[in-house]
Length: 352
Image (cartoon, rainbow, N blue to C red; front, top):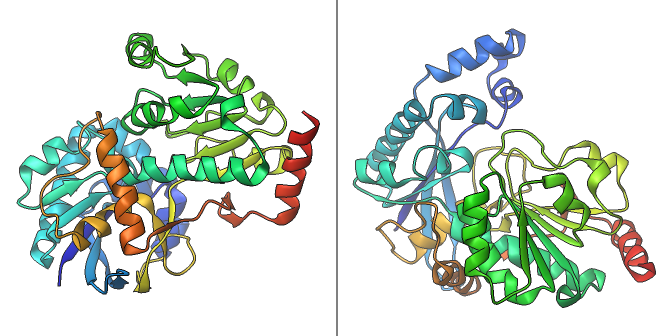
């Protein structure tokens, strides 16, 4: 049986406190200090992942008790901790290892980690990118929005997921606005897309105000998209964890549709034996990419670095159909999207 491993970490101090009972009574800074100097550990044994082809795999979650802020403050140390987690997964027999959330962001996006291990490594970003684009287009179809007559804003456009998504989606939309901090990198990306109607800016607010459709994949550890900047009827796919879209949008802006990006239904009678806040048999796309690689008996590196290949992204889409992984796009802030929400956005779009 093929075996995989995946590295998890808490998204906030509250996540750590929810898994460690005595930590609830400690100050946040003390909890972070304890997490930083705690060793990675095996958090769960995953069973029951079964492809439509009949093939079954098993795997393990390794946990690093560091929040995104902790990782970004000391990236070299975080990389060392991730490598330690990888060694634990190697001992369990994993043949391929996935990097979750900020473990795929720190350092050089997995390259150094892969060199230090004897198993294949992936960030899972190829399938994450694929599912983000798929979710956006499915939502647009459901609402009755024609992408060819729409402006798509991509926040975090020069990152690994943002740049490859921009290349894949540029031919499918009327106009694209690229947003990131580094203007030189933005200009370079826009130049590769000069055959299409593409512009760029480093002002998130300005670009969000122009968006009919929006994908946000920034690695910011804090929310960067506010309720006041969104125009009525905007369809947003928030891929980032922690979220790029402020929580207040859920209550203040019922006239926009914010979708949780990168959420996937996994085939089989799956038992994750770990609570990361999803319904049974549901996982992040980056986890799902790792599982698909194991099902394909892929034991070498896959999605690494900050320059993803379009063909790899499309390949993960083919694998998903082959093995039975399905994107779940009708989720917003960890809750199902209701018919009432969809009807309201449809009505707004019809008027506009």
